[in-house]
Length: 230
Image 1: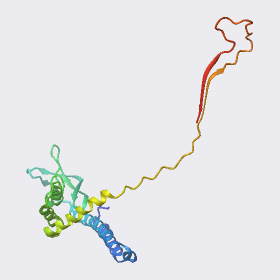
Image 2: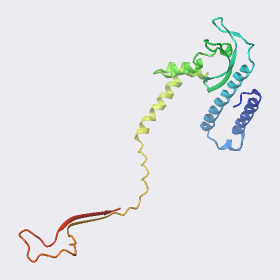
Image 3: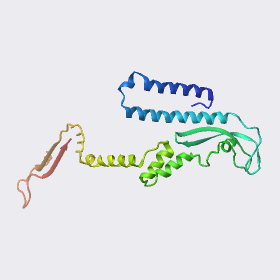
Image 4: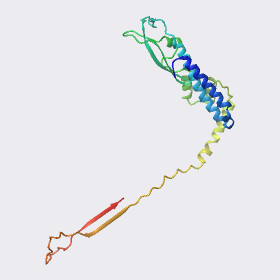
């Protein structure tokens, strides 16, 4: 996506219009409610990420007057624009902001301080969600997560009922027969195997047979032969 705010606004208006068409168009009447809910949720997350990036790009458009004063009091001249990634609840949002630095000094971006961006650029809300989700949450903790993150207030009785209903699906799930795997298509193969034990060897035509054989001597020599064709 471009870093110019004006094309971003036009793109956001187009995406919002497309979202309205999705829920009011001719195909909306044949959609299941859970499908519409999931699709709208994901597309609204993408729309939220675009709106958040528009905010960052708009704030980053104006370059502060140089030089600027770093937190340690050092006067820094302008250097360039440096990109950063902000991991929000909407997804990763990347934006370039003005950077000021000097030889031997670490770069300083005034926009980071103005927006109070965290050092590792992970949103506070995202970190809180990750911390809650990484614990073996009880019903009350799950209730706090839904209210704190999504703004939904559900009673403990509703959560307990949902857990009980979900638990009832466990046994039927494991009792259902496994779907047989599709057999691979049969291939045609032809194998020819021939084995000869004691086949006579052809004698050289110039060799004259002995009139009388010595003890243990035979007129023909034999050798084992095996042939396989695939």
